[in-house]
Length: 220
Image (cartoon, rainbow, N blue to C red; front, side):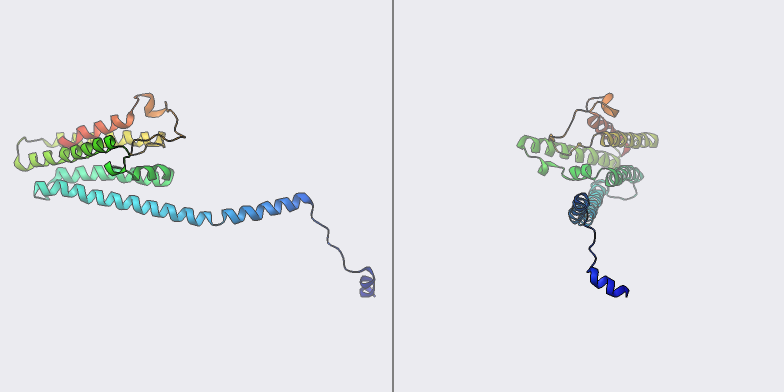
């Protein structure tokens, strides 16, 4: 009897969703279609950047170890081992921080050296700076090998402290300024910063680098 009554009524009509509900469903589908592949691509790009950064740091460690132990012609050189530990321990700590907190800055820092510069004058300046950095390490190593000027252990450790303090200053610069590129450039979104280490000195990155460079010769 109930079936006969339903047949007389005809099929029941479902209530039509409102225009607001239709708009919301449409936006949800479109948004999900756009955002769905992004996490996969984003994580892949971050993983690739992290591998590239750690690989570059590892290659730099081997290059610097060669610059220290080959001129010394010995690995029995505790000053060099302590210096490498401080230098690359600090570099690794900053790299891991940027991986987690500021991957964009890490990507900017990956383009460094004379080849990354755009202007010819900048390429020359960076080439001279790179050669000076190498000489700053090699000459103290030769001094140690041929015992030209004996350096007491406490002075070598004081140099390591200066290297660590220089890296600490650079870390605070990275934390405050996400546009600290390794090349000379101006980003359209870059703003003048007056907080953090910039409240103490106009170019804290250079100041920290100078402190670190002063500590290298006595450390070795």
